[in-house]
Image (cartoon, rainbow, N blue to C red; front, side, top):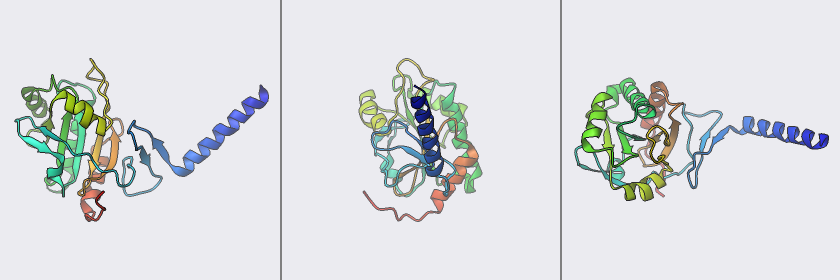
Length: 215
């Protein structure tokens, strides 16, 4: 028993050393990906694996206008998943995005901010418009919704978002930054996002040339 305990402690120590050397890996439930925080790099937020294409989708905004991710190719996109009646993580994430845009040149006018519903039945057009007005994001963010089957089996699945049935406060809470070429580059957990960090990383993406390969 003593030998086993010593071996376990030695193995744990080895794992700690390896994590410290290679950086922290945060698995977020994505089928083929993990968020990786590199020890050094241009981004403040946790970075995503290379060549992770952001999945396209077709939804409607708070005014009933059609929106697809592909229509914003050439723009940096801040994408998050929110609930219009949420009083916890959702307003905080939207305020972080709002603060980041305010810190960017020209108030981030070239940056696209998208929120996608995690409860399509409650996120009516009226509720979405009210939420954006309360957050001071009318005209600055498009709050998207669509049929629950499409959201569940396509959009939420593609982005590994898992809304908790019956609870609006406990759902996957991330802000994803997508580059001009349509690749996911950074994934901020809600509790790590700050306006300053988002603004910094959006700025990095805006200064990049659109040279990433199409996959």
